[in-house]
Length: 207
Image 1: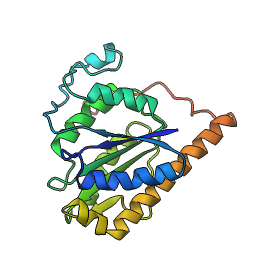
Image 2 (image 1 turned 90 degrees about the horizontal axis):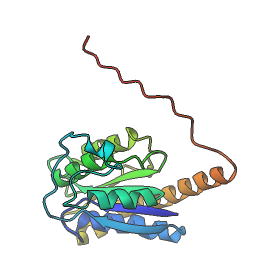
Image 3 (image 1 turned 60 degrees about the vertical axis):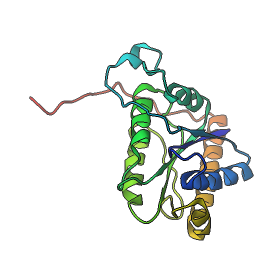
């Protein structure tokens, strides 16, 4: 089993990365393979709603960044953790553009456990968590929780490492993700299948 951890910060080895590595270490303790995927610090264009992904093999028509590479990595993963710094009580702009295109184009998310991790100097964390969790819940992904909201605090990686409670939250998250993945695997071995899906109903509210 494998979990993909997405570092949505422009800083490859910053505070968000520090939180994700704590989750990663605990996943590995539980025998789960991991990979950290950094979205980088180059411009990432937003989704333009062209719908080309629906006729392009569920790939984004724009191929000048790592969105399609992430889709391929997620297709091979059993679970996903997405980490973001807090920008003005929100997910940072590059990651929003990245996730909008990722989830609009992809069809590889359903039933894969997912978790959000956020990093802030002080505040805005819960609003950012709410924003990230909306991507998971629209894609039929079981959301993995911890003993508290999945956040760390600090202005530098060294300060994050001093957030003992935050690091414990990350370790608990890693344990819970591993446990759920193993439960799903055990269920599949016992013959339990995904729920049958109904054909989609799309209702507009303007008559």
